Image (tube, rainbow, N blue to C red; front, side, top):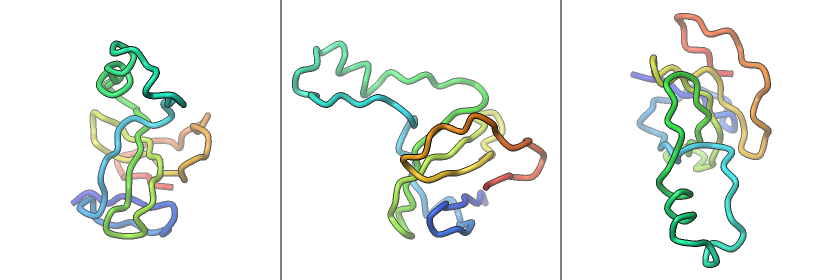
Amino acid sequence: MLLIRCPYCEEERPELEFRNAGEAHIARSANIAGETDDDFEKFFFIRSNPKGIIHERWRHMHGCARFFNAVRDTVTDKFVMTYKAGEPKPSKLPKISNEVVAK
């Protein structure tokens, strides 16, 4: 079972307690009703989906219920680190090893 560290609860919990909420650090429109259909489609459906490191939003549904960000490797499905919502994208990541690093 995959363990994910909640940066608010400060403990690792089973993946079943969490839900993925999509890509992190996306600029959201202040006037969604004023967006064109094409821009609306791009915002809701078009994501980068890279192979390798990705920054995602997650929610601890069956815990504190708070949103947080995570850095995850899409190849291995391992979490490199988690950090609180609102914090900037980390400029330096911890070294990835065979163990799951979640700080």
